[in-house]
Image (tube, rainbow, N blue to C red; front, side, top):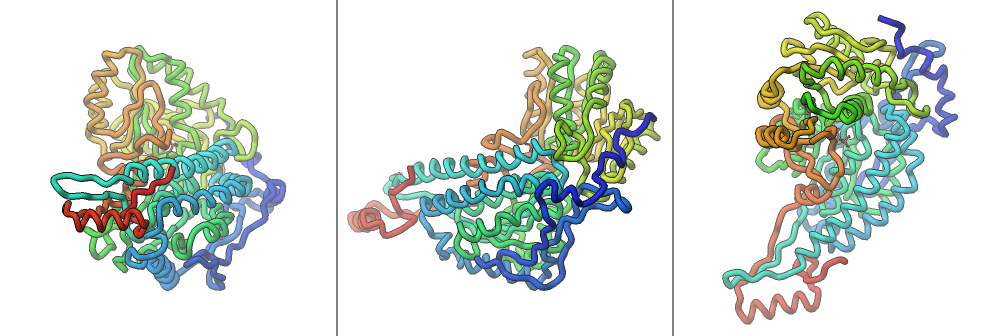
Length: 539
Ligand code: G3H
């Protein structure tokens, strides 16, 4: 193998890099609970960067710390949420939609002020490059604004009184109770808001546990949350999941679990709830999205979409293309150009211009990826690109593996990192069978120019997966589209409007059509006596 493209020289020598980015280590000795930013003098959990400094010896840069809360504080945080919910009688839960929207609009203004700090922390904590960090922030702003508009639409539709078979009714969506939101490290901002924001705006009270990597970046928002929302509507939980999440779930008082991470962890958390039938779950889990490249595909499109689809943010996207099936008749032509493109990707620090390959935040990830590569090599795959298979500290060089076959771990296991396994095929039934037998059921990308062929592939795949992308990489966005999965890939559907539905339930007020009941309804509506039974809506 030629000299590694990931090397010590790419890392900063010292912590001084932090001040050049306008960042000072942040010791967060407080947490937001019940509307108060409570001081904390107990144990702290250190937060380390994805990035190493090399002098005097290589070490991950320490960025600060957050409280290491225990089961006692977890229950205190839960109590704050329960008090706010107040068995469905809390101010926030019963508030008119327009007032909740006003609070979120206020929050959005405060949120936007924190862009610079949050983008810097995204780069430092999880190693996401500057442009992807900025786009994560902007996407989140857009998500909040779109959620407000989607709720206004739901509110407009709910503003009417229906009459069927002599029964008047008004049907609205009401909150579910206390929601535990847990975020993943790869989108620690966007995917936090993808669940906590719809949960809040629908009137629930939230306990929010930030991701382990990507936790300090929420600190600049604590005051904004405190200012915009009534006490207890949003509460922060830090600490070891095994202790604090266990305490919450054991209580049986969590009504909704919103979790984005592995199916194994989700199953463990759900099992702890003493009355599982009471727990609703909204889960974004594992995936191993394949691409299928047919012989007639436009190779320029294939290369562009597959490069981006496999290696954006070092392949750490649940929607990343994690295995490429390329028809044997075009595989050599594909490999020659794909490998060159991979070799041109620039490795470096996330704040540097034009950088794609950046340090990984999970300390064990480089070793895990190396074990997948080694396993494939011992079973006959070759590393095709220069530097492939090499790593230095937290930088892992993208690795193109070919030919990959079912006996290898990388064929089945989700890598969530910069390995691109490529499988040659002769008959399209081979990738279809792969999808059918897979434990995952999120998305696929199909590359071809032939409408007949594409149509013949769509039908067998739409009932195995939830999105078939034509000549386009797999992705979650635009966020207004449904994002979900089958099998081990998801439970429930997220999107701007679907999320408002999953964090709420339809509740109605009904009455038989009699003069007395009509008079009661009219009085309540005309005098605006109820926030729920109301013909008012928010334009
Ligand atoms: O990690 C999973 C993300 O939801 C994927 O979002 O497809 O927009 O990168 P994305």
